[in-house]
Image (tube, rainbow, N blue to C red; front, side, top):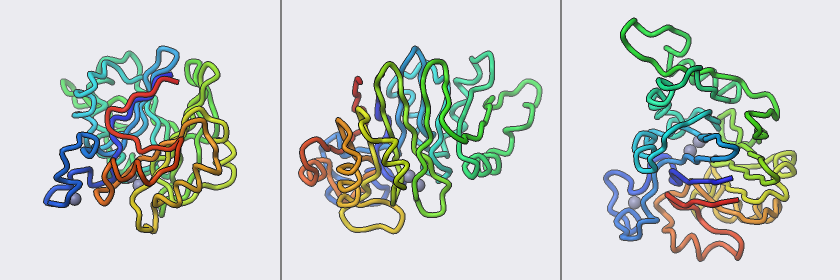
Length: 256
Ligand SMILES: [Zn+2]
Ligand SMILES: [Zn+2]
Ligand SMILES: [Zn+2]
């Protein structure tokens, strides 16, 4: 299984437009963060977690040739506003692209992208999506997919556990609190990545201390944090985390 971090930043991205802070002006390429999305390749399949507003640029930067299915985490703007960019891939697929989402996320997607259940005007194209509400673990072409409920403000949020060939990867990019069942599902995974927005507390995101505590409780073989804001540089984030934990950065690729 190969995991590629297409984006690792919070909703503003880094640099944040109009900001002259040290992190937004940093020369370190790891301080440039697109909004959060993760590509997972396993069993000959390419799965995408979330469709941020930067999706088009991310697909071009990584020369992504195909996307077989999408796993949505929640319907905040920074995770869904690139949804329509799936069209270039769905145009070349024989069947509509499967997209899994929680009930609340699916409802919001249908409201924002109100063409989802309409046929295209003849001679035009629309993203051809098979939007499916996820209710529990399921198999997709030999890959085991398990939704991981998490608390994240008012969002109907699910992270995802992806298992194939004895390897397990879990991603919960936005969260304030992980219920015990989700912690249990993540235990023993080869790689876990969760939200660590900044050092100061935030009402709907974990800060570094909260993320560290959650990752210690999970005890994965390798732990990363994601969804960073411009208050923390990559170098500073690295120093804030103990051995076995690190900040993700755009373009980071991990083979499991
Ligand atoms: Zn987010
Ligand atoms: Zn800044
Ligand atoms: Zn969010």
